[in-house]
Length: 237
Image 1 (cartoon, helix red, strand yellow):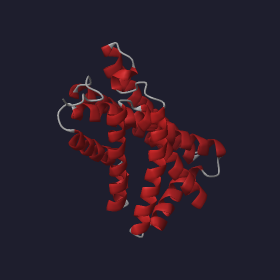
Image 2 (image 1 turned 90 degrees about the vertical axis):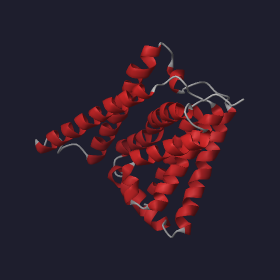
Image 3 (image 1 turned 180 degrees about the horizontal axis):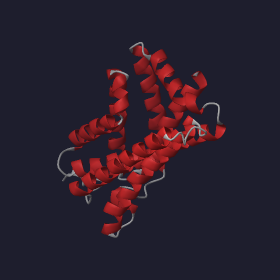
């Protein structure tokens, strides 16, 4: 007898609705920033703080859409999208996998002669926040726990859970991982090795969710992975 999917109640229509609302919110955000920039209303605000504020707004829109479209109508808690309690020992596994994947990523980049390129790209990512402690802390919080929470709800709790109802674990994990990577479209400019690394991380997170039946270990893994990489970029930059 096959094991049940870790999430089985989210519908395809709900997923499309969440993505549509989030897309409209992102469009409004970019138009607003463009308009304010044209009026020079943002000249006295640092680029780092603008980026952080925009990121927080974007993730908040998607999370609010999940609550309004998926969680609230079901009259259930956030466990409806995978935020369930789990065995505390699974957090240790999530933390270990984050460290392991950072090591695998580093070895992969080094093997293909891309280590210095990865460090340079990462240092450029951190550079706008380096000279402002508040902005730097905000960037780490945004790229770590906030991004991990929202992305795990969207791509593992909802998308993987929906796919898992219709196909096997492997296919569902790969398709959801490819869509996760496609959402981070900027990674394609870096080259196929970077795309492979991100896709592999997404597959790992899907399998962690499949095993734990909770998003929390994956959220920890995702957040710690991002924070470790950013710390490395900050140090080497």
